[in-house]
Length: 452
Image 1 (cartoon, rainbow, N blue to C red):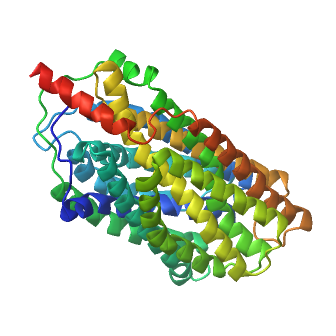
Image 2 (cartoon, rainbow, N blue to C red):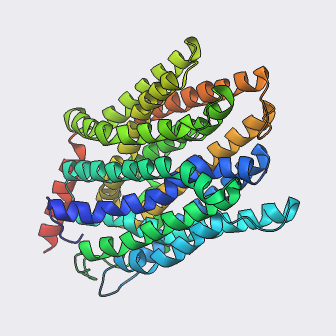
């Protein structure tokens, strides 16, 4: 294992984590607006939109471990991961603009082009996101410092969400002038230019320790499987993120539909999304504090409890105003961010757990395979949401029936509660309780010293 600093400078943290702002200009857009763009701007059915999203997410997830293996085996004077962050910036920006481009075709041709554009974007996004995420495990081996670094990343992610939430709808109206598809395309171009300019900053602000080929030989394909096969910590985290995706996906994708059709105030969704994202800047430091006090596993389980309580409240108490609904979404975002903090804080620790078990360190493959589960779960959850919207009788840009609106609320309650409950149950069995990871790191350092 390469020698890494236990503590990072503030400049080093900011230079690395600003990359999450750039990534979330893309990610928050596809999370919050892409499915709505498919249904209400392009006119696709909710089921077709959900299917496209699901296929692209699973495809993206399959690419992640492949990209992880490629990054692990990359050797350049700039390191393993940094070259991908620099060279992948422009292709990613172009693919994002293509994602929101409306082709001059209809029916099957429209669906085929939209799917192809989504697959291309996902491939380009993977080229940057996996190396960027893997670099996290190279910057520090301290579990507490990683928790702080995760907090910085989540703050920048929230700021990306604020930017996307606040800018998108008014810019769609300004550029589109009644043509929402055109407006979304120009917004995508603006976001892509901002993100593309940030990735070179990440490249210049980070450093990778020189790779010692004797101490860190290139893993074989068999080695990759060994690093995760018996890695209980890894598999528990994967189960957790798979089920928690049901909660976060339904929560994120239902906002625009609920405001437009249930509350009859589509414009208010902009402020709800912006306030929800902005509140994350305050919520995330609170979760960092909680994690330092009770540990990552207990904090993630606490977030599940918060989410279940909120969903049950929504089921029992009528919410009929946009202000009340905004408060509800902000509250539920506390639970969502706690889950994200738990996942991204615990995933790097599974690298050392696997290394402790097998003697093999392949963080990029671990991250890639881990993100495969996350993205596949998000895609399946989006497919379930789209299918559910079809089943309750949703028709874009029309007045929805009471049956459809009641069905939308049911989707927003039942699926998230199931996902959160199963996540908490899985985390009960996680082996890296508070303090265990620090002892593993000390033992790994002792092994390295003994070999030397």
